[in-house]
Length: 386
Image (cartoon, rainbow, N blue to C red; front, side):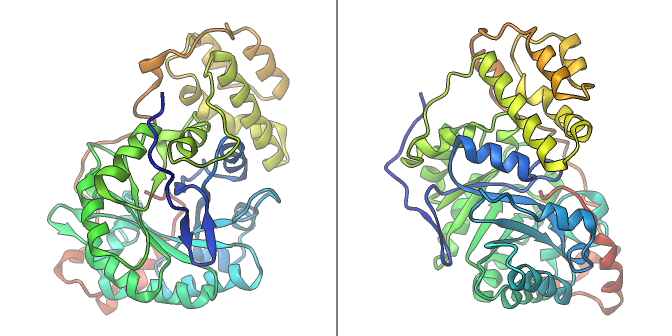
């Protein structure tokens, strides 16, 4: 049974009030309109888009313009921006505001992917505190009345922590909230998230909400994080992979989400959720084959711990039509009960700790060298948000 706490205060982001203080973390290739809609059908909260590079948005790249579209049922509309140049990030935020394409903008400073950090982007960027501040201020100015939030990591590694300095800068710049993934870039997704750091950040930042991210695999984990750290809400990433109904569990755990009901996660229930996800992907891509190809990455997550044989899993991971998916799902023991612990715990790849890839001399100074600014442009690549 899900642990509950006293009804949580709604999450306030500028003019936006989110009934349940729960946020879907941006995940590249995952949090498209289809997945956001599915999560919303089960629960409540704020559902953020895949990471969008500012440069691609300003240049109106076709794929990027598609990714920022929201279904009419999505409100508030939330977009995460990633960028390394203040002018470009500001222009991207202004585009979203002027063209009424978003109600909330999140800034990504958490990506640990070596291709990004090697160029000084992502989780490496807050080390350059002046550049970090310029980017955040430009986004806040460009967004106008739209609330801007930031998501970051603790720092590059344990010897180069940046989150407290960066949070103070962001608070002074006028952001509406600060989210901390309580790992360093060097950890990638390995080990345990340092929830104590979330508590420290909450004690440091007092004028805007602080959100905690890392190792929330269940509603019970979310409740424990809030009780342990005092944070104002939680950000959930890998824990909802193959389990979009987690947002219903979270809504009930925080005493909100009127109308959400506990689920009996039999294999039949999971199969229906998987099928609904595939259907929404087909609608999103406007292409049945492409939608069915995209759902393939979700097979292992949905059926973790359930009695679904390797042959069926393999065939689901090669299906090219909804009818083929229906036929395969129809062969399952749909009345099989929830498998308990076998379906719980970590989802997605954790990776292993590694020395972060950084530009030469990056750690020599907190300020950006003049000759390094140009190389930063190469950091604007489409990678996961961290």
